[in-house]
Image (cartoon, rainbow, N blue to C red; front, top):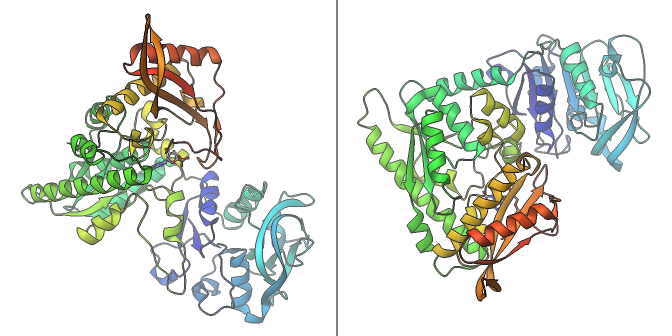
Length: 529
Ligand code: XMP
C-alpha cells in the first residue's frame, strides 16, 4: 500500500486514482494521521499538495515520525508536500515566492547518476508539467540535491542524496502533466517496490470485508436507492457484505420515468437479491406540488418530502428490526456518494482537521445522523463514476443498469417547466418513454450521456384529421459530456428526429409540437429547470 496523506489539495484524489490506474493499492488519509495509529506499514508515503503555506501558524504538518530513519519508508512530497519536507528539516527553507507559478511549465531533469535520478527514470529531455504554487524553496534542505528545474523554479524537484525522499513542485497527478503517471510509477513501483496487483475485484473483496468489520455481527443498515447506478451498486455491495441486515428503501415520488419504479423493484429484488421496500409517495408529492411553478421551490418540496418519507420508513424498519431474531438495531445509514462529491469531506480544512460528513442530497445525512443518531457508511467514496460502473459489473449488476444515464433526484419535476400536474406528468413520461426507446433502438444510447423529453408550459396549435387542437410542446434533450459541467447537444440526424416527432404526436395524447433543444451548456443547462 502507498499511503497518501491529504493536505487538502483539490487534486489529492487524483493521486489515488492514478495509483489505481497503475494497479497499485493506495490509502488516502488525513495529513494529521499518526503513524502509530496505522494498522499497516505502507511501502511508501506521498504527501499531497494543499492550499496552505507551511510557515503559517496553524498550517497542517505530517507526523514527524514518517521522517525518522528507523521508519525507513520512501517519501514523495508534491507541491505543499515538497515544502513540508523542506520545512521539517529547517523552517527557513521555505519562503513566499515573489512570482506565483500557475499553469504549464517545462521541467528539465538534472542528472546526477545514482538513485537520486530514479524519479525521472525513462524521461528523456524535458517534460511538460502543471504548476500551481505561491511558495517556493529559498534554499536546498541539507542533504538534498536538485533533480529538476523549470524557468521559474530552481528547485522544481529535489531528492535526498542518501535516503529515498523526493519532492516535486509540480503536480504529476493531473492530466496537464501528461507523463506524470510515469513519475508516480517510478516512485510507487520502482522506488517503493509496491506491487501492481490492485484490481476492482480485490477492491470489492476488501470493501466487503471492511463493511463487515465496521457493521459487526448484528447491527442493521438502511439506505435509499433510486434505481441509478450509484445507489444500486452501493446497495448490492452492502447486501454482499451483510445480506438482509441491509434494507434498501425506494421512495416513489411520482416523478420517476414511466414504469421505472416497477422495473427497479424487479431488478433489485429478483435479479440482485437486495432486501427492498418501495414506498409509494406519488400522491403526497403531487399534492405538495400543486400550484408550484418555481423550480427551486419544486426542488425544495421534493427534497423535503423525500426526507420525511425516508425517515418515517427508517423508524418503521427500526421498530420491526427490534423483533427480528439474531439482528440488532439499525445503526448505520448508507449513501452512494462518489469521490467527486466528497473531495471536500476528507480534505484538511483548517487548524483542526475536520472530517465533514454532509453531502448535498437535500440534507438527508444530517437528518439521519443528527435526528436519528445513525452513522454514515459510504462504500463508494473513493471511486469515480467509471470505477463504480466497473464495480457494478464485478458485482453482477446488469449492463443496462450500469450504463444508465444519470437521472436527477427531483426526476421529471425539473424537466417539466411550470406546474407538475398529474396530466402533465403523464404526458412528459409517455413522450420520454418513446424517445428513450427510439434512442436505444437506434443504438445511440451509449453515445449520449443524458437524454430526456421535457415539457413546456405553453400550448401550441396542431391539426389532426381536419381538426385544429391545442396541445403541449415537448422539448427533447440529448447531450454529450464527460463531466456534466459542460455539454454539447447530440447531433441527431434530422430523419431520426422527424420519426421521434411523428411517434410522440401520434401516440401521446395532449401533444401538438415537438422541438429539439440544441443549446450547449453553458449557456444552457442539461435539465430544463
Ligand atoms: P444541469 O441541469 O445543472 O445538470 O446542467 C447537471 C447534472 O446534474 C443533474 N441535476 C440534478 N441532480 N438533483 C439531482 O440529483 C437536482 O436537483 C439536479 N439538477 C440537475 C442533471 O440531471 C445533470 O446530470
